Image: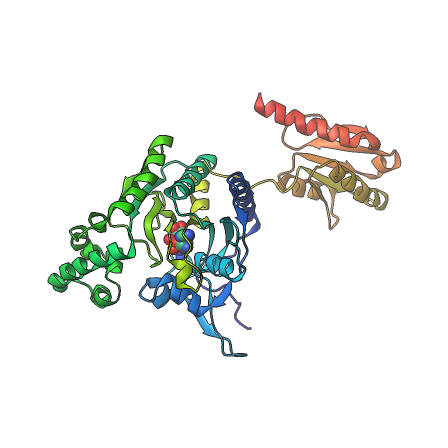
Length: 430
Ligand code: HAM
């Protein structure tokens, strides 16, 4: 016998019970984006490898060891499955001259790929939803993005997600900080791990991103980039904070936050929770004013964020101990050939009235069909036996309340069903 084939490690099937929650979340996200005037952008999963190398940075974990990169054997092109979508959004904006005339507020949702070590909350295929405000220079748009996130946590009933902020200043300020940081790290070279030793010369800021617990005291005491900010950078940072204070969004400043991608300047932020174990960052983002030029476009300021859907869903599941969603409102049972033929018309008619209806398929006794109806989560069962068929009538049974089964004329069925469904809603509300 041959071996069964399993999904790739770290890449998950999302089965229907869980997918119902995904769909609900995706709908909430779309209307949330619309309420801030963000429009959808869809880019390919595959991009030229050079895009991510240039955008994310050569000396980052993502580019050094997490990308699914390969050479297309048919034409020799170097390709990569996108590990994130900011680079793709910027590429698309440049390629299609999207900012001609006006800046753009864009959003995307979809799978991303990183070859990380899988664990709870960390996968090799994961899903992000992200927003990119392209062509906006001021701190106002940075603040808007943060307000959006705060509203989303509220809409989803999630508390305990805390905002951490930092500023990475300008490239010149980073260069001055870098000199001081390299001197500091060199003076403590014995305490550096192998990764840090290597990055000391390629990308010393990345040393501050180390998760190695042994390195934390050294990192804590290192020179702070915040202390190297000039007037303009400080004013920008103040501007963001002012809006947060005005609107009442609590935050803390984390001077060691550098983010895992190299394209940031000025504002960077993360929304973190301690409810998800080690993978507590729900959302990350910041300003990336240099990225357009870095990948061949005109200088264009921009800011954005992305959040991990798996992490959001884990928080939602924890917050509301969810029961599987019902598959439909009405389940149609039928037995006997006359009744079975009528059942199609009955189900269609109920759908015409805006109801979600599952029609029993595959035959079986009424008892067996009733079990399926119950398991579907439907509120009502519509029953068609030979007797009902002969009299042009239909029986309706309430599946969630102790009530007498009723028999109604076929042409009054939609009314009867709607009444019973709304009655249940009213009683629940009362
Ligand atoms: P990032 O911090 O690399 O930023 O990822 C954003 C979020 O994606 C993380 O906070 C986390 O929730 C989720 N995430 C990342 N990796 C994984 C994984 N392996 N498994 C599950 N979830 C994961 C970016 O990707 C930037 N493009 C964000 C951005 C947009 N900056 C500006 N605009």
